[in-house]
Amino acid sequence: MLRVLVAVSVLGSAQAWAQVEEPTVMNAVQERTYRMQHELSLGVGVLPLDPYSKGIYAQFAYTAHFSDTFAWQVARGAYNYTAKTSLRSQIERDFGFLPTAFDEIQFFVGTNVVWTPIYGKLSVADRWDVHGEVFLTAGATLFSYTRVFRPGVNLGLGGRVFLSRALSLRFDLADNVVIPVGASAPNLGNVMELTLSLALNLGATE
Amino acid sequence: MQRALLVLWVSVAAISQAQVADLENPGSVSAIQERPFRMKHELDLSFGVLPIDAFYVGLYGQVGYTAHFSDTVAWQIGRAAYNYAAQTGLRKELETRYGVIPTAQDEVQFFLGSDLIWTPLHLKFAVLNRWVLHGEVFLITGATVFKFTNSFRPAVNVGLGARVVLTPNVGFRLDVTDNVVIQASSTAAPVMNVMATTLSLAINFGAAE
Image (cartoon, rainbow over all chains, first blue to last red; front, side, top):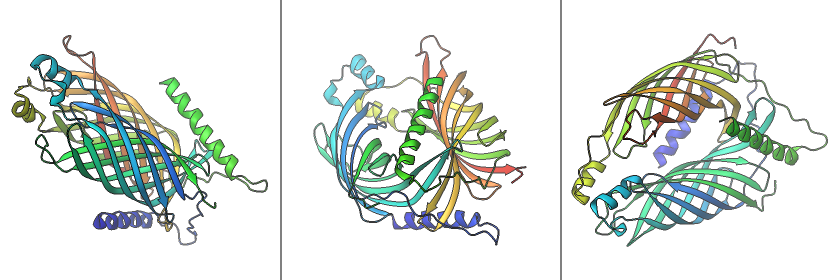
């Protein structure tokens, strides 16, 4: 993880140096307009990777922001609804397998460290300004499957668009490497999460 | 599509207006800065993934050329990709775990396409509060012809992309598109989806600034 962070940082600085402007031009970084403090988020998400079923979940989370770049998503909890794929329906219908033959995620809880190296603003059609940030996440998740709990380690990337000082829209993309537990477990499983959240920011002084 | 664009436009404007209300003091001025980089003739060398098929993951190399007519409108005149299909292990799992032997899988071998690009968003962002980078976000719509193992099939694609500019001549570009492929066979479902994720090194020629 440290190596990845260092690599990202070096890449970012290399790109920035590549953009160094003429000697007479001053390069300044503006103050942030928005800052986060206590973040409550309510989101909906998708687990798209399983070939037998697709998960659609609702998630609630709390994140404490310690600085502009560092935060801890103290806890998140999600309840998952599973939709069968056509492949699974075909196996059940044509080969007589029971629905219980397929392991499904029922809910999951987790915690994450959040590192936010990028803050920016967008001009929309050269008329309006929108502020936002991009962050990396790393953490642990515990998945409740139909018959067993399985732990996972997750890495991810996210973005936020500020609506106001108190409200923002947050998008998270994370991949969980799930450690095999139980007889029906594969070697190592991947559970990808896509989450879109409405975030409420409390206690920020600016 | 028109409705989706309209909804997107209205929501972005609403977000911006919400921020403006939050930001503006009676004495302050809100200004949009000039773009420091502009695109003209863009040559892309790309690597991409087709991640959505349960039986294989496509890994492809792609070359493309894009002509930029203004800051917001461009035409990706041509792109061509050759795909390698890496098996996911699902076929083996179906055989060993469920005793099911799937029929031969139709895989993407190569594809060609052309796209219109609309770039409403220009980015300026700070990395670790020290360095400033520029970029843009764009929407893509176009058409693609896929060569599968047994047939050619046409597709319509929509997508989203972003660019980070390194110098006036070099940038990185990420495209995520979904292709709705029209199935040729009467026995198959009428359409199928092929999602493409492409990371490109973009070389820009002939820009005046």
